[in-house]
Every structure is written in C-alpha cells, then in structure tokens.
Image 1 (cartoon, rainbow, N blue to C red):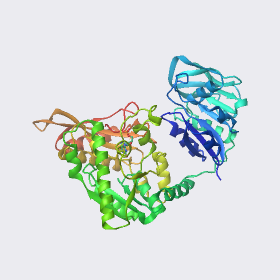
Image 2 (image 1 turned 90 degrees about the vertical axis):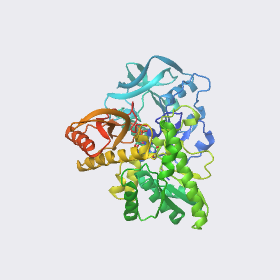
Image 3 (image 1 turned 90 degrees about the horizontal axis):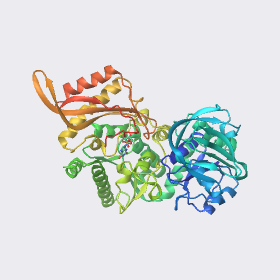
Length: 518
Ligand code: XMP
C-alpha cells in the first residue's frame, strides 16, 4: 500500500496544482471536498497527512466553508494553505481579520525559527501571496516565518500537529514552493515518495475497467496529445470495447485529417472511425460571432455527432450499445470551465469538452486525465511507449480554428487561416522550435486594413501570430521569437496568402490574456 496525502478543497483555482506538486514528489494524493464526512476520510488507506487548500471566501462571512475540528484528531500532520490556515484558526478560537492591504503577488518571506518545513532552504525567499484576510492569532501557535505585510506568514501549532502558511507554495512564483511542500510530505508526514506515473497507469486501468465493465465506449479523438494518450490507455484497459471517432468538423488545420489518420494507423494501430461533418458545423456557425456561443454550438454538435455514431455502431451490431463517451479532458480545461462547488472559481471560457455537454447527454463520461496537467499526460504517454511524434504534438483546442477566427466563421475564412497557420507551423518546425514552444499558430482578425502591393492598393485581412511558452497552459509567456523568424513569417504570409495584407505579433502573456483568442 502506498502513502496517501489527502487534499481538502476549499474552492481555490489552484487546488490541483497542490496535487500536482504532491505527485511530483512521488506521493499519491486524493482531492476531496472540504465537506467530506470525517468517517470517509478516516477510512482512507495509508493516510499520512492532510493539506487544506486555499479558497476565495472570508472565514468570518456566514456560510463560508469551515474546517471540521475532528480532522485534527485523525492523528496525521495537517498543512493549511491561505484559506486553509485561516479556517483552522477560526475553528480553534483564533482571530482572522481583513488585512489593511490586500496582498497579491511576490513578497519576501523571512524564516524566523528552524522548522522542518523550511529545512535546507534560504532564510529569506520569494513567495507568492494572494489574500485579502490574514490571521492575527492562533492559540498555542508559534510564528515560524514573517513578511512585511504579514507578521504570521507561517506558523506551527504542535498541539494540533499543524503548520499553516499564508502564501501559496503550490504556485511556480513561490521560488522554493515545491521544496516546502516536499518537506511537509517527507520530513513532517514521513512519506516515502514511492509513487510513480507507472503506478498511475496500473491504477487508472483498474479504475477504468471498474467504471466501464463490459460497456462500449466511444472516444472523441482530436489527434492532439491528450485524446491520443487517452485512446492508448483505454485501449489497454478495455481493448475492442473502444471505438475512436475522429470528427472532421471543417475547423481543423491544413492536412490535419489525413495526418491524424496516418499517425494513428502507423504509430498506434487502433482503427479510426472518421466522420466528415464539416458542412454541419459550418452551417451551425453561420452568422455567429460571440466566442461563448461558438463554443457551445460546437460542443453541442460534437455531442450530436457522437450520439449519431453511437446509434450507428449499435445498428451495425459491432459490440452492442454504447454507454460511455471518453475524452482527454485535462484539469486546466475543467478549472476554467466550471466553478468548484457551484461558486468560488469563476468561469473563464467553456472548453468544448467540459462546458458544452448537455445534462441529458445519455452517455456516461470517461475522463482519465480530468485531474492531470498536459506535461503529466506527456510523461504518461512516454511511459505508455508512445512515440515523440505524438507525445510532443502541440495542443490544439477542441473547437479548432473557430476560436482563432474572430468574427464569423465561414469556409472561406477557415481556408485563409489554414494557409497562414500552415506557414507558421512549417517555419517554426524548420527553426527547430516546435518542442520548445507550447503552441505557435495564426489567428484571423475581423480587421481589414489598407496596404500597397506592387503599385496596387489592397484592403485585406489582418492576421496575428501567437506563440507561447508554458508548462501546463494555466499560465503562459509570449515567446521571444527571433526577429528574423518573425520577418520571414510576415513576408511569407503576405506574399503567399491572398486575402491577408498585414501580420502582427501577439505579445500578451496569460494572465492577463488567454492563449487562444476566444
Ligand atoms: P486558453 O485559451 O484557455 O488555453 O488560455 C489554454 C490551453 O487549452 C487549449 N484549449 C482547449 N483545449 N478544448 C480543448 O481541448 C477547448 O475547448 C480548448 N480551449 C482552449 C488551448 O489551445 C491552450 O493550449
């Protein structure tokens, strides 16, 4: 049995980042709601410690999520992060106040007392704060670190077996955050660090077999890394109970449909059911310019196509009724599309495979990566023996080029963007940058501007180039592409793509921008 860390979620946007850091320290973890019954937590096998996440509420507001004091009698160490620390304070007769200055961003932390949480780390270090409240006192607690705005930046309370930090060790901006969490896991909870991605594969295969039984599954394959790895994992788990469906929705990149078919036949050896639905998608999108409406329409159509295929498979008699729809949904898709516990986390955009699904889908969802990040799926893909050609494909969004065509999506505008985008991808590949970049693509703007080519006046569309670096898509930096490369992209697009006479480069990071323009 492996060691288990329980993460109790109080509604933070970054709870899954805590889980990810725990996995990176080779420790198994599970995320449960803060409201989970104590008895179910007590029964968790191998429980070694608990982490209380942050959250957007104020503990003193009526109805705010509370910490169950019974947790502190389970006999394992507890770490409270931000709200988790404040809620612990509230539950034990301490004082939480509204800070005079809300604090968002990097700040210097000074460790004042030797503690295993900061073992091996510098006394002064940069941490990331994001809070409006702070704790003022916690009976029996000792301050172990402070910052200019936050006298109780980290505390320990021996009687409660508790450590609390006001900053967020799980985010990358906290320079030694991963090491602080690893210290909690190994030095305080005594975890051995014996969990690996290979264990995830075995456990997930068991879980999938249990969920699916002898049911039939269809999987929406986009050819991107997530759905491809999901296909292979599912194929391993349930073999011929799986049918992979590739929907050509008319919103794919140039030559994508042929490319994916070949890739699948050569590298994976799983049959692909290709559905040509371009006309259906484009006519549903006619006249639509609102990004969220586009996403919802596309999401709904995908579901319609899958349902039709399910009926077709049944009528063909190839394996009976389809009961499940599998998707390579990742955690960032989930967190930006739904709000946790019906409230705290706010919706950024409806990722088609999450936000666009109807309540009466009629198919049970199978989402093996719902709690993983892209780079973890890549590690998983490599562990499953997939080639670099698949593992290192750049992500491509489910709604395809529709969210890169601002304004109305028409067949003609899709063709225009496909040609510009193919040039971007070819030049990025030729420059050897594909793997270094999270994504590089072209975006078609609903803007026309005046140009001059030869002696002729032109009045044509403008295209933006988007290239970003990122490790998980949750945050991203615009890529500092060489000027020569940018120059080449601009002149090739303007010369070769009739209908585009201006190229701009997007220098917005995420946040405040998002990677896709819609
Ligand atoms: P944003 O635009 O939200 O994108 O910053 C983050 C990452 O997610 C991809 N993306 C999607 N992937 N379905 C997907 O499977 C979607 O609806 C979707 N929208 C965005 C995007 O390409 C980027 O890698």
